Image 1 (cartoon, helix red, strand yellow):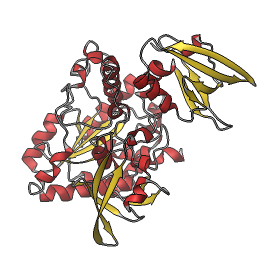
Image 2 (image 1 turned 180 degrees about the vertical axis):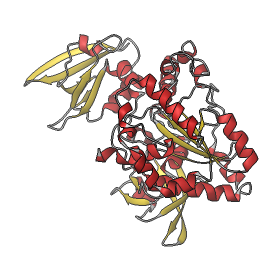
Image 3 (image 1 turned 60 degrees about the vertical axis):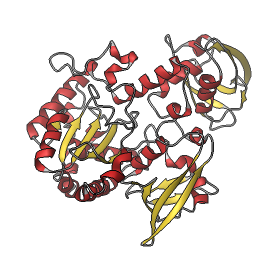
Image 4 (image 1 turned 90 degrees about the horizontal axis):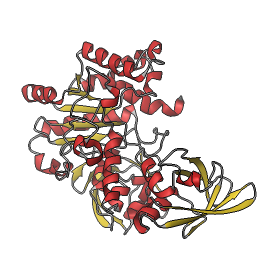
Length: 433
């Protein structure tokens, strides 16, 4: 329970309430509908109604907070209302915003809401004219979130957004880069792989859960289209890189503040020191780790030098962060939901984990049903140690094999495998689909 506390508390706070224990074992359809009834009855949040929120913001002059969050969050239901009501600081800050709870991405404007869609929790803070003040919500592990988000960190991001709102529109030009270029598909349901399955609206009159486009399905659709076009670039494969990939570790309880830098890393070479408050990166004001990832996501994969403005012991300093060619490849994508589709396409349905007992990768799981069963058909079983994958011997990262299979090899190529099982060496292969 303890390892989920940061995410769960944060999710419960922005949601308005966690589900009571009596509803924890009901089906997902009931949970979604109960959540809708509860939030609509409270009147505190606009429920899946962005137009109403923007209209209110234009009338009141308040900034907007949009929380995109999958319902129900199974980890959040472990907390009760007492935890929420105890955090008066967050409630006081939220009162200053027009609040929107967005539980699906059906019909979502992807020219405005561009974010790491492998998240199940993401926050936007905006002006009524669509200017983005900042983003919040970061994930770098399947279950361990406490190093990335916290209630304290979100509160400080909200305070920063309120300060930017107070200075608006004088700072509008500086904030312009927080919006990206128009995407190829303006709405999630326009992606080829989603077009025939979903509409711009949830089916509140029928089965609501199957009608919902989840955030990660946008990532799935982007990667699937890139594979079909043979254009799976590093930018697509490694989206929203985490700063720890170049050795920068931030304090989750603060606005972007350096906790430490890894020895010999790009961050250390750039001169970042513990305690540095990173105020801007590429001239964009930073409210959170997610804001930094937005800048990194728009940085070329072939290398670049980024300009940072930091506050060190109360005094401003300028630093230059140089990222080498291929820097995105250092990032870990194994936690991402969208990586499951890549495992099918690249690994024959294997999930590969670090091998705690030695070299190679541990086969943590093998898909049992088509189209995820190519490795199974090749004789691979859970618990095997993979010591060769095509030209890779004693691989140490699953993502390196995924990238090799999908960026270097082509469909129809044979991938030879060497496995260790109970002291025996096994050789086999499968054909890339």
